[in-house]
Length: 307
Length: 307
Image (cartoon, rainbow over all chains, first blue to last red; front, top):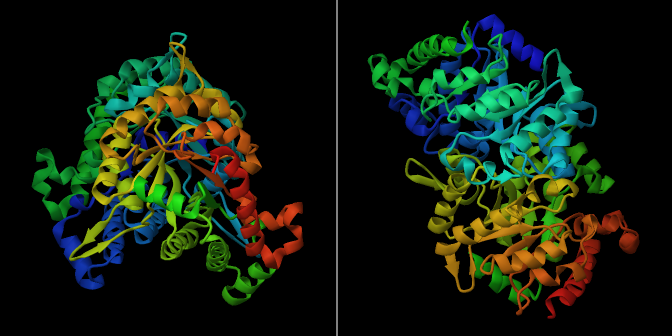
C-alpha cells in the first residue's frame, strides 16, 4: 500500500491529505435546510447532508491531493445514519481515485483487534459472497495494548495490501501527559516509535513500510528525532494549521527527497469559507474555498519539502 | 451512574458482567442456516443471526446478572449491518433491565473525543427531535492521548449520568510492553490509574465515581496495588476464565465489602455449550448452557467477594 501512496503523492506533487471531519457547523445553512425539508428532522437528513457536503469538497480537490482522511468519530456521533455517510464517503473518494485513510484509532486485544482490522481493512465472507465492511486503504491504530493488539492489523495489511498509521505522538496539548514520560531517559513515544519501525520490518516496499506512525505537527523537535528513529516509517502529520503547526515546523518530518511524511489539514480546508481569508467565496462557495485553501497549503508545504 | 451499577450488583448478588462478543463460530449451525435461508448470503442475515443469538442469551441470564458488555468490534466487523445488531442488542438489554457497558475503547483529541462521547453516551439534537445514537450506559475509553482526550467523555458522563472505564492495565499477554514501563520506579499503568482517580474526583457518588478503570484479571498483584492506588475507582476486570484469571486471583480487586469491581466473562458464558463441562446442553441449548455457566461463575466469584 505505502508505495501506492508515495506514487500518488509524487503524481499530485503534494504530500497532503484532506481531513474529511465535517462538524454540522461547517455545513452551509442552505445545504442543511434542503436535506431537512426532504428527509425531516431525522438522522437520515444529516447523513445525506454530510454526503452532499463531502462529495462537493472531494469534487473540488480530487485532482490536487493524493488522499483523504475521514475521521470516523464525526460520523459515528450520528449513529448508524452517520456511519452510512462514512461508508459512502469512502466509496465516493475511492471512485475518484483518492487513497482513503480511515482515522479510526482502533486498538484492542487479539481476536478483537482482528475484528477491527477486518472491519476497516479486510473482508468478510458470507456464504458464497465477499464483502469489504468499511474498505479504507489505511487506518490509524492505538498502540496502548502492545504488540498483540497491533499484530492482527499487520496480518490484514499483508493479506489485503493495506496499511496502518500507529499513534506515536499526538498533536493535542495533553499528549505529553503519558507519551512524554521518560523511561531510562527515553520518552514513551520514542519507545512506541521504535516498536512501529520493528512492526514494519516485514512489510517494507522500497524505503518505507506499510506500518506508518502518527506524529503531530505541533512538536517539531519530536518530528526531527522520530524521522531518525524510524527511518523506514512513513509519518502521518496532524495538527497543521488550525492546531498551530506551520510548514517551517514540518521540514524535519520529511526525508532528503521530501518524502516520508504526509500532512493532514481538516477544518483549514473543509471549513475554509469560514476563514476571513476565503470569506469572499461565501457559504455557497464552500467547495471552491476548500480548493483555494488546498492550493495555498501546497505552496506552503513546498517550503518544507523543498519541492 | 456508578451508584445504579452498584445497586444492581447488590440486587443480583453478582459482581458479574456478561460479555456479548459473539463470533460467528459461536452461533449454532441451525440458527445460521435459518437466517441465511430467510435473508440470503448477506450481511443482513448475519445481523439477524447475531440479534437472535444475543436475545436468547439475554433472556436466559437477565435475572442473574446486573450488566452486559457488548464488544463493538465483533459487530463493526460486519459493517453497518453488524452495527445495527449492536444497537438493537443495547436496546434489548436495557429493555430487560440490564446495565450496558459498551466495550468501544474509543479515545481521540478534543472535539473528536467529544463526538465519540456523543455517539456512545450522549444525545444529538436534530431539528426538534433528540436521538441517542448508540445509548450505552457506560463505555470503555483509551487513555493514550491524555486528559484532553478523556475530558469530553467526563463532560458527557456528568450531563447524562453515564460512566466510563478507562484502560489502565489490560489482560493480554503483551499489555506490559508499554503499560509496565517504569517511570521513576512507577509503572505507566499506575500513573494512568492515578490520573483516573483524579479524573473521577468530581463525579463521585458515595465511595465510587463514574470514572472507572479496566484492570485485567491476569495480573492479580497489579489488582492489589491498583485497588489501593485508586480507592474511589470501580474496576472492570476482563480476563477471567478463558484468558486464565481465577477467582482466587480476583479477591484483591474487591474492597472489604466485596464491592469495587465487576468481573467480565465473554466466551466462557456465551459459548459455554462448546465447553466439555456444558456439552450436554448441545448447540440448541446454548442459552441454557450460558445460564448454567453464569450460575457456576456466581458461585466461583463469591469466593473472591466473600458473599
